[in-house]
Amino acid sequence: MNDLLPDRSALWQYFEGKVQALTQRYGYAEIRTPIVEQTALFARSIGEDTDIVEKEMYTFEDRNGDSLTLRPEGTASCVRAAMEHGLLHNQTQRLWYQGPMFRHERPQKGRYRQFHQVGVEAFGLEGPDIDAEVILLSARLWRELGLIDHVTLELNSLGSSEARAAYRDKLVAYFEQHRDQLDEDSLRRLTSNPLRILDSKNPDMAPMLADAPKLMDHLDDASREHFEGLTALLQAAGIAYVINPRLVRGLDYYGRTVFEWTTTALGSQGTVCAGGRYDGLVEQLGGKPTPAVGFAMGIERLVLLLETLELVPDSALGELDLYVLPMDDVATTQAMLLAERIRSELPELRLQLHCGGGSFKSRIKKADRSGARLALLLGEDELDAGRATLKFLREEREQMSLDQGALIDTLASMTASDERA
Image 1 (cartoon, one colour):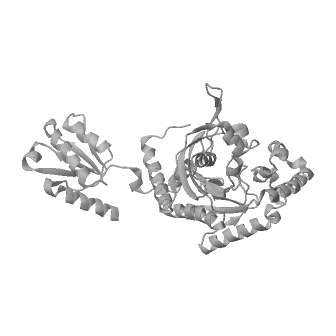
Image 2: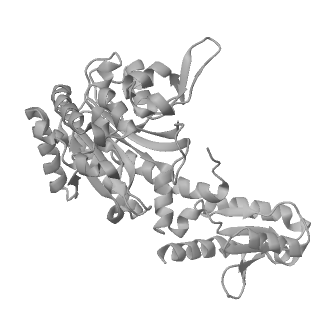
Image 3: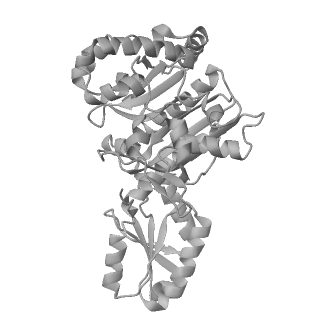
């Protein structure tokens, strides 16, 4: 687990702001759920035999003896909240969330035991059009962040539970014939969750897995029609994709559509967004049958990707525009009043007021260390003349003496020209 320090938080705010604006434009409403839930919620939804439940959850007993778990993912909590508050009764819902998740797994580049996700969930819609919409939403986010050329959309269909059960038998029979090639993890999964063997990253097993039966060849007619409808919509929207028959996802609740956005820009291939359809989960948790689809993306990994590809605009770094500097204690009151006036009339300007006194030399040093592009100096001479001095801290330009009445217009025009540049 790690701290997010001030020099990094502006980048996170940039990403989160993009997500918030985009989900609003698509008509998705935010939901916020507790980070602690009953352990049974995750065991029932994610699956007893998944790595998350078996190895990774932070679970503890509270003083009442109840088993509680720090949420390892957001979908189950979202479904629980929607059911508990009647949001799914004879209605559709488009929801999104963001926040910390917790898994006790080996830390690696872009992955932590407390990590943060953005998720989107849509309930009550069963056609391929909503599957396409959540994928289009994620694709638009990549375009707006400049990432679209650095990610690849991978698709698969897991079919119905009946089709998966029949396929499971064929898959187990195939793996039994190649039992000597299975690693320890795969042997354990052979009886509990054989589809997850297809997702193994063990290179020694790759040739054997490539020849394994394909789930796509064993789909039921309705699932095949649904998948063909989805791919037709994506093609019409100009979204490129590849079909990955080994894409199964690590959570038991998925059925039919599953997808991942992957990148090779962080070294080995990594997933930056993943999701799919989970039509049986609401009923599994005690609600009425409700079709549902969604995705989640890891903020840490996406922020790392933006930095690696140098796609972070300067405006996203939260740097100060202006440092208002009273040159002596006499000017402190007027400097504060002027700073407040500028904040009122130019709310987009990032401004910091010098506080704490000190010699003029130390004040100038603080102005420079603030990282601001400009310093606005007020001293006894400026107060007497009703003026202020604008000093350029990052450019070789002559400082400007401005009438305080014209100061706002000058700052506004300079800010506008910087934005155009």
